[in-house]
Length: 371
Image 1 (tube, one colour):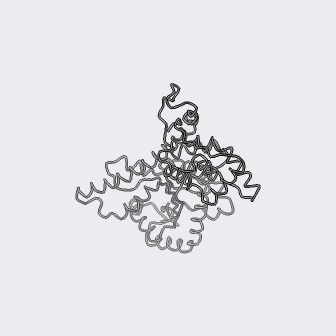
Image 2 (image 1 turned 180 degrees about the vertical axis):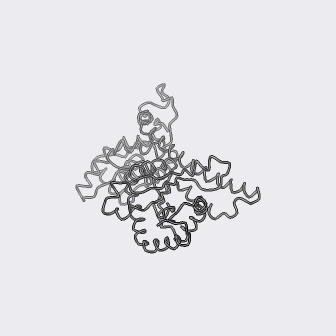
Image 3 (image 1 turned 90 degrees about the vertical axis):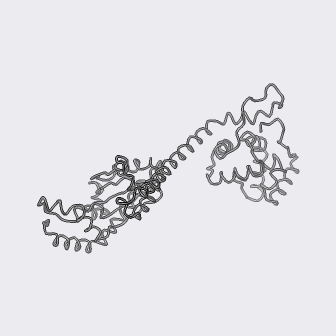
């Protein structure tokens, strides 16, 4: 029962904490699992980690003394310490991008009873001080329907704090807590701390801009296959022809590679990291290979290579994935430049099949292809 006797309330809280320690940890695990399920089902949210903790007992008491005790006792308001510790159970959601913070908050609002929202970012940006870390703090309880579920009913009276921040904000919070004497220090040291805080903020913005620009490049590449075909189809016109193209060809990069590869293999999911390495390998063998040249290599050889792949599957049951098919197209297009894109045994086997089936290597290193 609430009172104004701090010693009694401190002893009561310690007893509550000790008796509930296992239940508190189960509640922590339950909320982490629930939040993880909500966020993992959202395709537009990128999360680095979701973790939680039960606040240390004596830290809870110290927080109550620091933030609430004097005010409550001055107004003669009876209290229980546990009702003022909203972050007794804390969950931290660490996102990759700032734009994910609001998305996570929206999902939490749908599934929990939100008691309060504290926008740390707005608080800091609304003042001249740059000390402190940014993020969103949300105090919640299980909502009515969910609180009645058997697996959550035992936790229905607990409050939880969910911290939502970016990976960069999380890193800054760790450093921020290690910086001593942030207020009463020489101005030159304040400026250095402010500079460090600004660098972290800039990193957050740049991560988001890189993500957004990558998305724009992918979208542009998806729309630009017609231009790629113009570059590769220009092989029908001699280089000195009046019909020669009047545009500058683009060097093959990861975005144009994916667009071209998706055109020839629409049902295959190309992994980003493999695309990146494969493009680097192509450019290593043939520097400044254009997207039109790459497209021309594939168009010129894909039919023959697929016939070979079908024969190989029928002969020894071994299938060839799209990356392997592309390697064969490059080798067929120019066996000198792309000599090493295939292993020796693969080259021998492919060349033997080509000879037996009346196919000649055609050097598509034609001078009139846009390069």
